[in-house]
Image (cartoon, rainbow, N blue to C red; front, side, top):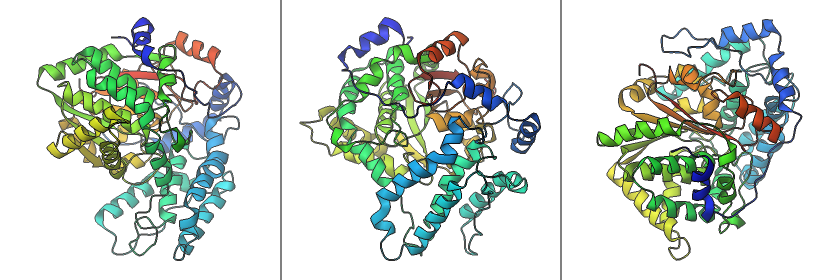
Length: 490
C-alpha cells in the first residue's frame, strides 16, 4: 500500500494537529548545492583518493562523487562544524552535566572537555590529531577500535587537514569520539568511566514520549497482519525520526501532549520517495516462510526509539520476523543515539507506566519485556555504528554476520543514511538500488527524514516540489523517504 493520498489521510484522521519546529534558517539550498559542488577539482580528487578503499567488498555501481566537506560557508555542514557542535551541542551538554563536571575528581575530565571545545572554536585553523596512545594493558577490543580510528584519520592528518577541511562525516563522528576520550569513558580510574553526558537529554526524551506514543501504540495493537500493517508500522518508524533530540530538545512537561500527531498529519505531502510496495512484498515473502531475521539499525533514543520498538513489535506479532535484532551504538554519540542500556531502560519505563493514564504504553512495555526474555528481540552493540566508515566498508565480523543471518535490515535516521551514501554528493535522482542496494550485505530498507545536504533515489519533480515549499527542505526533517534495496547478490 502506498502511504500517500487518501489512504494515509484516512489513517491520520484520529491524530490532532501539533506544532513542528524548524531547526535552522538559511539561504536557498539551490545556492548551497552549488557552493558544495564548487570545491576545487584538485581537492575533490584528493579527498576521493584518501576516502577510497581497496577492500574487495561490493561498492556502489555508480562512480563515487566527492564527499561533503565542512569548509563552505552557507552550508549545513559548515554551520555544524564551525558553530553548532560547540555553541549548541557541547554547550548544552556542559549545562546538563555542570554539577558533575564541577564536582571533586572531575578536574582532568573538565580540562580535556574544555580543550576540545577550544579546538572546535577555532575549527578552521585547528589541525586534526590522533587519539592519545592507549595504556599498555588496553583490551583487544580497545586496541582494534584505536587502530580503526587511526586508519580513518591517517590520510587527513598526513594532509594537515583541519576540523573543516576534512570530510564532514569523519570530523562530526570524531567530535563525539574525542568527547568520550575527554571524559575518560573507558578509563576505570576516571570519574568519567562509562559516564553518559547525554543521559539527561535522552531521559527527558523518554519521559516526554508517552503522550505521543499512546495513540500510536493503540494502532500498533490493532494493525492487520498484512501488507497494510507493515506499511503503517514502518510509517510510524519513519516519521519518528523527525523527533531528533540533537536538533529539537525534549520538553519533559509534554508527557501528556501528542506532538507526533502533527508530524503524521502532514506525512502524505512530505514523502519524496516511497518504496513501500517493494518493502511489503519482501515482508510477505518472509511471513510465508515462517518469519525471518530482521535487524533495525537504530538511530535516536527517546520517542523515535519507541517507534522502532513499535515496528519490531508488529514484525514479530505479524509473523514477518521470528527474531528482531537491534543494532545499537557502543558508546554515547550524537546526543540522542541509542545504546543497549537506553533500549532496556525504555522498555522498563514503559512497562512501569500508570496503566490508567497510558494503557497502551504500559501494555506494550510488558509485551516488549517478554520479547526480550524469549529471545525474540536481541540487542547488539558494535563499534562500527559509532565510526565514520561508509557502509560499503562495513567491518568484520559484522558484515559477514549480517550477510549470512539477516533477511532484512531497516536503516533508521539521517546519520546512518549519510553513511549508506558515504556522505557523498550523489545526484538526487541516482537510483537507491545502484547506490546502496547493490552493495549492502542483505535486503535493506532506509527510513529517513532529511537532515543533511545529500540524498539519492528521489524523482526530479518531487525534489523541485520540496524546494518550492521550503528553502530548508534538505535539513529540517520535514521531508522523508522510504527506500528499498535488494542487497548484494540478490
